[in-house]
Amino acid sequence: MTDKINKNGFELHNLKHVSVSQANKFREAPDAWIADKLFGYKSPYGYPALQGLAVESAVEMRLYNGIVADDCVSHALDRFASDIKLMKDSAAEFEKRAPIIERMVRTALEQLVELGKPEEPPVGSRQHNIGIPVRFKKHALNGTINCVGFLDFYYPDKQLVIDLKTTAKAPSGWSISHGIQAAVYKKAVEAMTGKPATVKFLYVLTRQKDPFVWLTMEDPDYYLKIFKRTIISLEALLSVSSDAADLLKIIPHNPDSFYWSGAEHIAAELYGDDGKAK
Image (cartoon, rainbow, N blue to C red; front, top):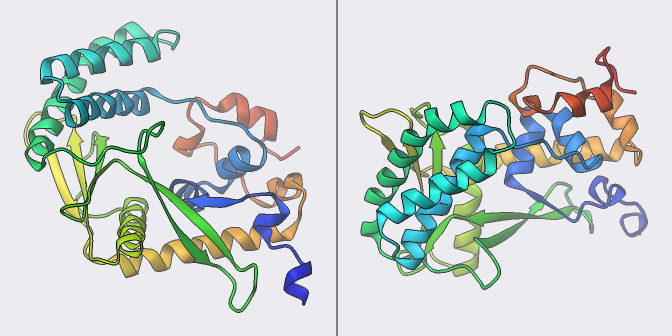
């Protein structure tokens, strides 16, 4: 009976679902997570993120619509130029990043085109949505929350999911964040289809030699355990108080985290010049 009356931490803050990216953000930078999800501050995109979005958009054009590679590259460069036009040092950044964007687009297409056409997302959506329930409390009627995710490219005939990453540093193996993402995708697709699924991440790199790396998720259980522990910790924090300001005072602020790059004005709003929660 108590479970029907008492709200869990997510319900206290009116959070209807979680996502892999938000769980990773909470684990790596809980202060930035609170700023985003509880106070509604959205950190601005930096140059690397906008570069990645331009590449992804161009690759989608080729895989879904058959646009030739040269036109895809032009699209990526035009989008990047448009997205950064009001940012500081945009001309210099465009000159530096334009050849990298072209190389990334062509590298991704060389690797992906041979797989054939992925299944197009539903009308009005850019990606396929997936979801799985995550239990954070045993035996509680309200002890689960849905985790949502978004697939870059899905090949149902092959039971294959491909996620495209753009990065400067070549991974030697799965990072915790990307491993969790791949493991959740695998679990969700297998739950949806009832069949084994393969999840691969393609990393296209800034370097000219060996410009790509493939990783395949082989051990999802390890990463799923870390993910579940993160959700349990998140719910426990949210249960402390229904007042977001109370939680802000509990979590230390780390201004050195990359999540705060370009978002110093948000930190000042929340923490003030002395770095203490207001």
